[in-house]
Image (cartoon, rainbow, N blue to C red; front, side, top):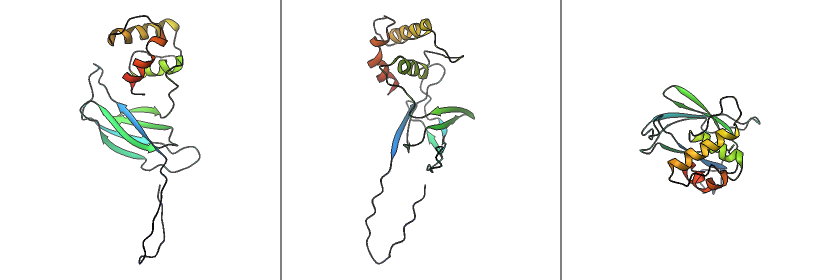
Length: 159
């Protein structure tokens, strides 16, 4: 997005710019669950359907020692791509449901690798098993109940 102003050079001018941005935070893990530290990644964001500009549309970034990545993107951005080692991963930005809903728990468990949805459907037993695995891995009482993990899941997921 480019903003061009024409003002006299012999005067002082105050310019207030209202930036509508959000911080996109990601933690990249290797298949063994360890952080993907100091990884070079490319983030590409797609302009929204209404044609508004998004600046910058591509950024070269590096994860920190814990595999974390934090970058500001325009609030209207909803889609993007993360490229790591020439593999492209699609991103749906801002599409997480609240953690106190079944779909929100499913989404977070999928993001953390506890739940797979190969055919687009999550079966009740799959969700219960994923919840139990999350509870066991995090030293929680294993109940298989969604409500018992919401707070811990939100913390582990980061949102």
